Image (cartoon, rainbow, N blue to C red; front, side, top):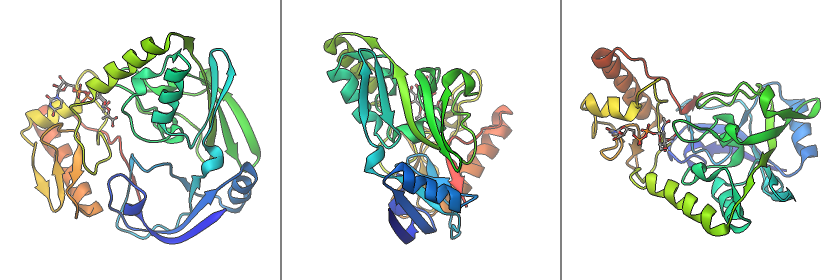
Length: 279
Ligand code: EPU
């Protein structure tokens, strides 16, 4: 197990800003993970930090991350794969393409690792990864539990995974297709995401309210390009906040408050955060 002290939140998140994390543990086996789970009542799990912002306050809660031992894809049979939680979504899709397995192409272009994607049920506006998961293996201080997807109360950008558990693996039932068909399907989703902004961000900041798009509302409120400190509402897609290099978590949080306020004033709609603010 690797143990790190006083890590800058910005060094492990795609927003590239954040306060100090007192302890970060990188586990390399289930045994190491159990040891930590028995030791801590409260903890946080981080994958590649694509949907998380650490506030300016020092974080005393221990943070756990899964190491390379949790990065794998196993072909169980013709159409079934089991995937470790630390595996990148892009790697899973490359595997699906090579093996002609169809079903999760809609995840193409979504950054991050499988564990985080399941936690927030990442996906498109009408589908999340949990729609395609067949079962999930979760660890807590008592051991490993296998949960079938129909027992998980997931929804739009909500994984429904129990608190104080760590996602270790997920199994997918996919459909055999030609490599070319899977590639074309992946490319079609990548094309749809081509208009999304680059730079330091967390992807979409707010969930889409029912029946509309948060990006469209923020845009209609005239907020594109608005800045607080080093944080800016993207001119390309209004549901993205971009760290222009020197944003503090407070800049981002103030900008989010301002967006929420303006959208509520103009459209009487309360925006809910998609991004997780910690600390
Ligand atoms: N729109 C605007 N102005 C903007 C942004 C969008 O008018 O600044 C309009 C678009 O023209 C379009 C509509 O709003 O008519 C929807 O926009 P888009 O297709 O970009 O989809 P979205 O609802 O904003 C959702 C997901 C994205 C995902 C895309 C594509 C949420 C919160 N967002 O965005 O996911 O990539 O669909 O599938 O569900 C993420 O979760 O981090 C994320 C970026």
